[in-house]
Image 1 (cartoon, rainbow, N blue to C red):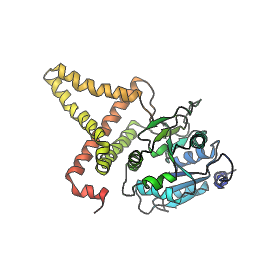
Image 2: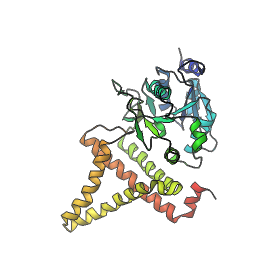
Image 3: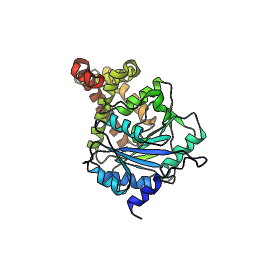
Image 4: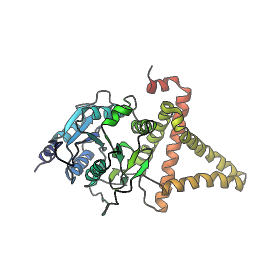
Length: 334
């Protein structure tokens, strides 16, 4: 059986089958002809087959299109070519009652869809659901967890990236679709609107995705984008992320304070400047929710580097938006 046949077969809906939902998978992609093969292979291997798979691209000349067509999945064009517009097009083009996102550099655990559907069927109050995102240095020989954690009890969080986020489509009628102006941070903006409408985001610990992070450099680049996106969301949602803005600013400002205290040998101030952010970092590390880290010293040190990357780019982009009307117009409009 070739790739096209294997994925074309799953596109027939089973909406009239008892105890079954119609689930559309949306992948937004740009020049990802190789990595998306692993994504599509992981969807083909699902114990609960998806009812529909859509690949959203910014151009029909994109190199991803050929691979998607080989697998027999539906390709949808996003002419605006922002991450926000691509996700919005994916949602409006899908025909499932549940939309589940996965990125083109990710692979899903074989039970991913099954455990998501199980929660939706058993708990009608769950409107939005996602799962943990493990890091992997490669997709070809990626190692999935040998055993899944229990689905219940569900956790509830404020944010899950769209690399592993799903929702009942009715939610879009409540909070609106993804912000088409956003080139980054569209998932954070969407989650902020969910919170503003008192819609909980359930964390299903068994709905596992592996995300490709080949090098530390690639991770730093991704967290830099996280920081920039949070600054944009601050200007969209104002007080909703005020606490996060204060934390980021204080963490960045404590760096020169710590350096000064070391130079002048004020070890009491140094202890405060280093100890407070270290304690906060340890708390975050052991309380990680959607982002799973190995509990080790090396992973903790990497977490410190990534967090400060996020904080630094948050503050720098925040200052740019604060003092540049042109930059603000890009997210607000004229």
